[in-house]
Length: 281
Image (cartoon, rainbow, N blue to C red; front, side):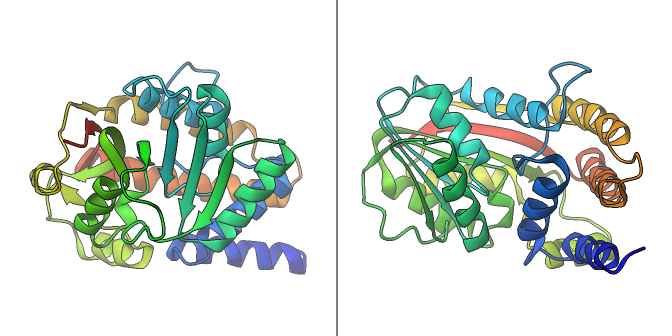
């Protein structure tokens, strides 16, 4: 293996064992190998022929189906990642303004470049903490969306309080997150969660959290079966797009399938994937 190949392999291993450089590594490698950025969340089953990005769009669409019409409103996506999902929602739904917030400057840089490349108007990206969303205004947004990011927030009570603060009265929130069925997990998985900055709440904790900050819960949907089927299709997609003499593509394919195996273990043994939707009372 060439020197750059060894470096890339070590970068993937490091990304798999810690969150600090995960998004930088994956953003760079996906663009280098596949020529585009992907969303940074799980896939959702649509059909057996979906590629990775379409599977991710399916999950976004499943979330959007639970929201009121977004045309003309103000949207905040918290934990927007590299902005691929944010620009997708903005282009599809036609809001007056969309704001993406993410704690990783590398993600925000990618998101801004993507929006500029697509010549997208009325969309902005900022570096910020979901648990302290200053200087975003009180009572400002019609909709706040967080898809597969809240698992990384150590203080979700503060996050929910911030969601309530920035939403207009009667405004809508949507949170898609892994919810723990049990706190009993083996030492290895607890070590991995600490390394990856993962903090899982139980359903009871979420329900209390919504109530404490004045957020109603109007809909909740368990999409674990659809996500599991989406992973089956995505695993097959990586198998068919993971070689042909390209060592980096092969490494990404192996890395992705190992990650899928870990996620599927959690969904089978420890967690369910829930979508929560409600309003600021």
